[in-house]
Length: 145
Image 1 (spheres, one colour):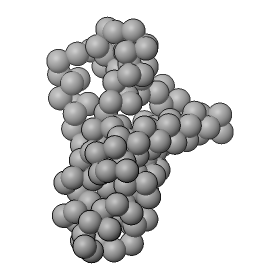
Image 2 (image 1 turned 60 degrees about the vertical axis):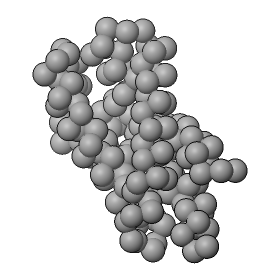
Image 3 (image 1 turned 120 degrees about the vertical axis):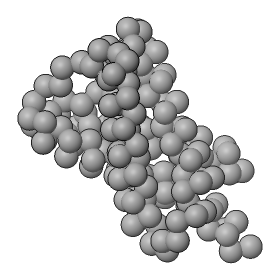
Image 4 (image 1 turned 90 degrees about the vertical axis):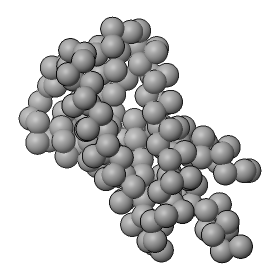
């Protein structure tokens, strides 16, 4: 599997794992966090398009890991590299949300904001580690050859 295909696959799987984590977190008392709902509400689009955008964003993040972050960040431990990438993805997502919030109406977030932020950070870390585990082996092979 080439780098591009593996990155797309990592983005899809990472997005699925992150989304399942957020759904399970809501079942255990964490505030409900639904990026597809947020996107569809902010942009005035259907929930189906919100889901499509959510997965496209995950794929773009995984491509950025495979081509930009992974090769340049010199962290040998794949888990720590994934955690670092997840935190970077969270920070970038918050910056983009702030920018989008000036253009589009922001939906009201339910629940304690500290818990929402913590859930989002952990969700992005789960995404980052998943992407690193899937995309990481091909990067290691390319970097060592």
